[in-house]
Image 1: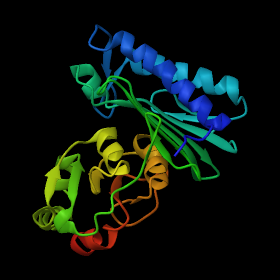
Image 2: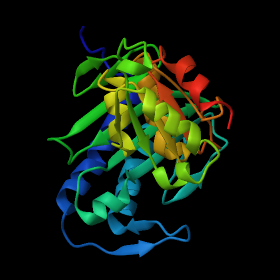
Image 3: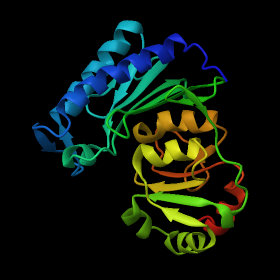
Image 4: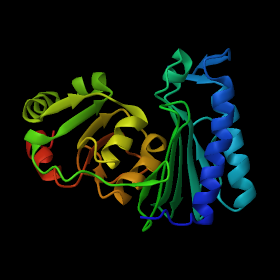
Length: 261
């Protein structure tokens, strides 16, 4: 399968992700200023520089578009098209010097997610996944697709943000699900979504997320044939804080074990 010619939206998002990647690669495992935000999460000067670079690329290409960024906030948020940007999703990993972080860029059109780019420039030689509605999902230039695993007993489950899950109402039912799957892992951040979309694991459960963490990954997973909602089965939107993502074939089985909380 030949990779389609990216649309102008995708081309701009890929260019913006590479602009951020150049900054990240030049500063990774080096010295930089780290501040602690009000929510007790870190932010570095590199996060801010990356978001500025991303906005500069996208703003030149689409001056009428709005922005919702992790570090620089909202700009023209009522525009027809709005870019959702997390310049370094996984800043804690970036600060500690291990490569489980990524740049997430998605395009929202009247509430509908159209485009997603997920770039992990320092992981495994670099991973760039992208997708656009109707164009399939791609990882480092190759098409990706979810698995055909259709039983929990054969499935691999990855979970993220375990402390928040442990404090929630589904902790006991999650324990039951863990006992029914073949393997349990905790890859976290961008990586377990790349694996899910590539058919290398089958279910992802995560809490304590926001839309900027998962918007691009939502487009990629859907175009790879998977599905994604919050843990209550609700849609992925600006208020999303949890995730149940599957290869599609396992959703009903997972929901039957997890229940409604």
